[in-house]
Image (cartoon, rainbow, N blue to C red):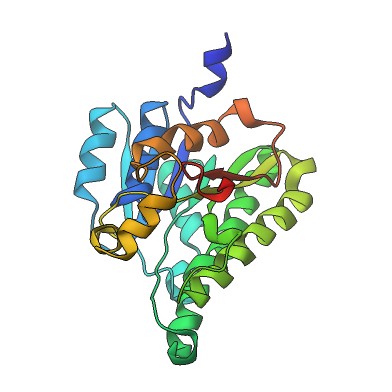
Length: 253
């Protein structure tokens, strides 16, 4: 049956930044499709995500780590596999941002944004691949943005990181597709989350963004969950290096 291709029963998914927003929605969606969830975030726990995952009848583990710090990323996947017994899916979702005019953008923040969005994504993908390669299968989903395609306003670090993440996705796909590992990039547009709340409520910029979205509204986090399940499942087994957009038509305008 076609719907069976989307089932994730018994698989383990590692989702970074799963404590809230899009990460939480994707983690819960993966759990509802059958996966057990490992959350990695700076927070000591992710109680809301834990409750929803366990409500779906799945196991939940949380690891506290600042992915900006290489020392906290080192050996992370091995520790997770020792506890969970396996790793089938990696969702590189964690991120930070900052908004400054390019001439005033702090260099230290620029490097921090690239470290979290790009270097950490590569580091964890490499760690995950070393677990997945012997089994001849695995799913890696990088969370990009419409800024994989655009310049953005006063977000040079975020934009640079997301452009690079799309390129990294394609390069890793070329390297691992023949070994059964699917690497793809999911690019959200403007979604209503806690992090985007101030922008959405901005009477000028928020309205400008809304006016440009052909769908006439911001996305809701649960609307990304189905795509995450698809990319994590056997339904996407022939997809390698794809950069997929969910943006309410933003880029088509």
